[in-house]
Image (cartoon, rainbow, N blue to C red; front, side, top):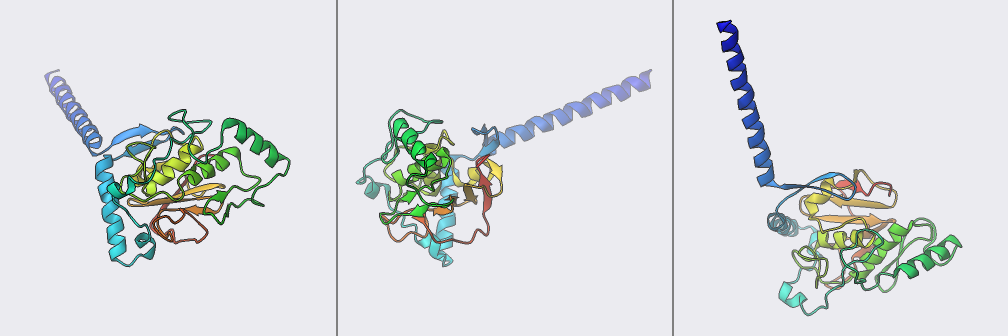
Length: 264
């Protein structure tokens, strides 16, 4: 009996030690990053925004120094300079809206309903399943695009030529300029797919893995962009400080993780 008691006591000590290690590991994970659940129920590990944005900035600078023409064409501006540009209104959608104020260029509910009826009747819109880049730098949704895709495009149109500034669009959706992840977050919020802005690394675990039928997000630890109905929405590779984020040119996806909103 004494032998059994000693063995049972030793076992309890081992189990207690394992429990402490598990708690310690959990605490370490909480320090490294906070866990949040996105709109689609997927677990996202969100790093401290300041830390992540600093890492993004360093990654872009390194890419520019390495001769990456795409990164060099992001045309980053200081926040003091960008303040001269009017702020965008908060993105409005039929889903995850953060405020009732409509975004510039984002249609009202009645306009969306009217446009969808026109699309069902074969009304105006880009042919087939691909969006088109209009002469003014905005995008036009294909005639057969789901309503949510059309609203994501409208969200992107609202900030297509806004300044690029580090951390833009992260303190609030309403900003004078947007960085890469702030831009993608704003457009997705316009479609009701996002409730709050994410940094680039967050998008590596957002939604479902792989390319989507309508929307494909390409994310890395330092940059994120997306294709919506075949048209690229990206802050790098632009023609100038006010160049459009919508681009027809493709780019290499090497080093990026493809994700997409479920069902899209």
